[in-house]
Image 1: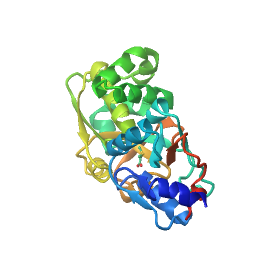
Image 2 (image 1 turned 90 degrees about the vertical axis):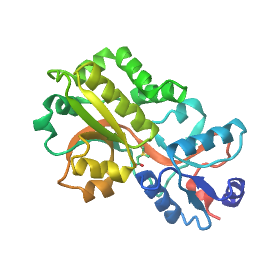
Image 3 (image 1 turned 180 degrees about the vertical axis):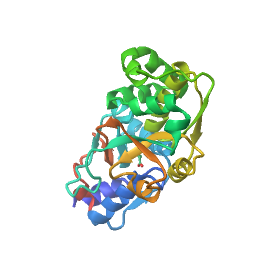
Length: 268
Ligand SMILES: C[SH](C)CC(=O)O
């Protein structure tokens, strides 16, 4: 069947990202749901996954990666999601902003800005694409802030400055969260006078850091499904400030030059 041909072409391997991510959990579920016996989901990182994709794409070689939207890879390459009729990857979700308990009292300006932070997938992809092209995350974020004064004005509406106060943002090194966290930092610093530290950690320590107060906030909670394990584990020990982006997607992603359309075709 098609699964054998495509499977043989990619060595029955799917190139994944960091093991704790919800995307990897959903990917393992898809392998189970579609009966993909003999297939291996390779653990790694977002960076390693995009490096493998770049190499394969340049040589027009077959590859299957775990992918998500928003992502610059859909701007840079001609890619498609494999159809997921069993909905192993769930529905489109939202990314939520999460803060430690008490942030609203201790740092009201940052708290208010974080509550008002909301943008579109196309906004995030602009920053991600600049970064993937070699611009530093800080410079890409600052450029986006300068280029989008009306959106930024919404985020800081009725927010008094807090000159010199410190704030700690936790994040996981996914290209989407590198973009969003740097944009939030740029606005907090340039518009509200905060000194922002960014703490890059794996997903588990990110949630633990918010729950134990080591970090003030993060803008990386994909919900209601992707981050649900951590959301449930730390329930009551964080504050959900709501959605900062709507319209995400998760799945298995392949270059358009591959003749495969659905996850079902991967079955041996
Ligand atoms: C990889 S997505 C940016 C988020 C997640 O999988 O938890």
